Amino acid sequence: FTSWNEPDADRRRATLGEVVTADVRFRDAHGDVYGVDELVSHVGAALRFMPGITLEARGKLRRAHDVALVDWVAVGPDGTAALQGTNVVHFAADGRIREVVGVA
Image 1 (cartoon, rainbow, N blue to C red):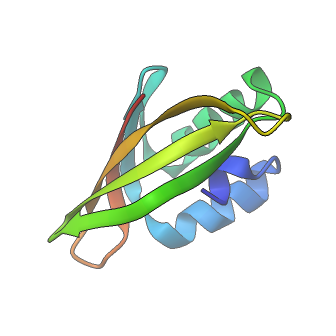
Image 2: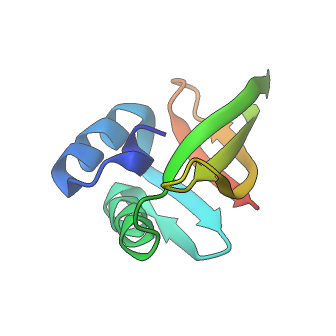
């Protein structure tokens, strides 16, 4: 979530690079991207088209083996929930994220 709220592409790439695999896949209603560079751009587009929105994890992370469910909310500048959903996260053997499917 830190990376999704980071406006600077270089810092976003650095934080993502620590937690995702090089060939990470991210899918949501607005895209289907592969690799860190495409993910950095996808997040940048979200920040550009939803100014003032921040993403926050909500509730307890639920994990079984290499899959986790993470609930999230997109909070508007006034503090209200603009959108909410769940991410299905798949982990690589080394514990880094290899795939995320965001469902809103």
